[in-house]
Length: 161
Picture 1: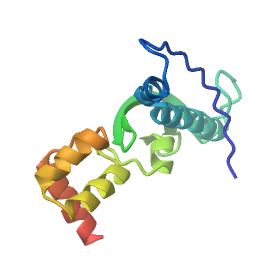
Picture 2: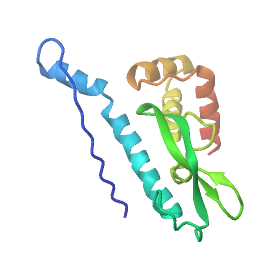
Picture 3: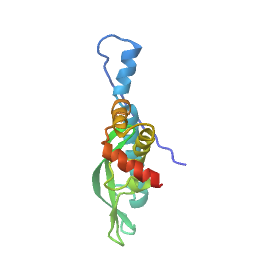
């Protein structure tokens, strides 16, 4: 079982009238779910890399198979929106291969911007409407933009599965 504590401080100012409508809209605009996702991945990354490479800045790493190899920026798009992640890279000292363990653990494929959750949602919507209608629904209700051709590609891939 994995337990991760995410301390999050949220500050915001209400403009205009103080009402439940303004309050709920402001909270929705903060995209709290996306912030939680990014913080979780950041914490999970640190746990995995510390387990593989040992604690940061300790000098007892000579006997370890893995070592830290810097950081890398990665952009992904999920149902929660676009996220920019900074993840650790790890070097296998035996094979000299460099990999990003948190991305492997979370099944985030290299060079794939749209993740499976958004692909499945767009495929589900597209089976009930046209690709153009799906683009409209994705933009206005899920706050994600996909082109009709991307949706078509996702429908074909999902259909094969």
